[in-house]
Amino acid sequence: MRGVLSLLLLVCCCGQLAAHEMKTALSKVLFNSRTGNIEVMHRFYVHDAEHGVKQLFDKNADLLNNKQTQQLFNQYVAEHFSLSSLAGEPIALSLVGGQLDGRFYWVYQEAAIVPDLRGLTIQHSSLQQLWPAQVNTVNIEGRGEIRTLSFDNKTTSLQLSFQP
Image (cartoon, rainbow, N blue to C red; front, side):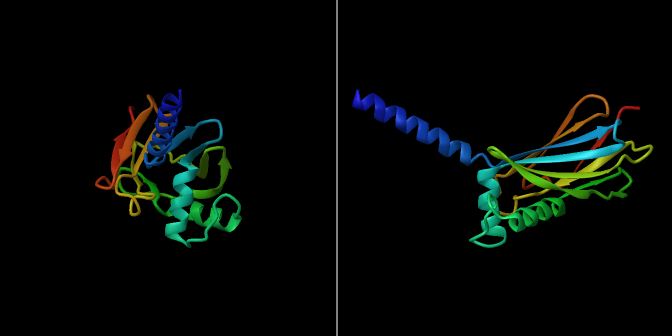
């Protein structure tokens, strides 16, 4: 019985370690016709964000309990994510804020929907200078079918066109 319990404990620990090593973030770019805004929501695992702020800002940085650290991380994400038109015109995103939500830390941005926007150029490099394996996935919703783009440390910018 002791061997079975030891094996189960080992499997559980390995699963937790693997979950912490995923280094992924998920973002949603939502064209919200009700509000007239492009709403951007970035979701990071708290574990990754907490380790990130300690390396980016200060080894004593505390994402869980310190509003200043949260604001620094929010600003960092905003500086490492951008939208522009296919012609290269930047879409000025406002930083709305961030929040802890269980296992996740969310960062929110928004901008007015650009008239006659035919597509996007997106850049998303958050945490990639810390962890080359970091993958940032972006779902684009509200302009036809949901589209998904993935950014790794070799992919700095991707484009997509909207269906007319």
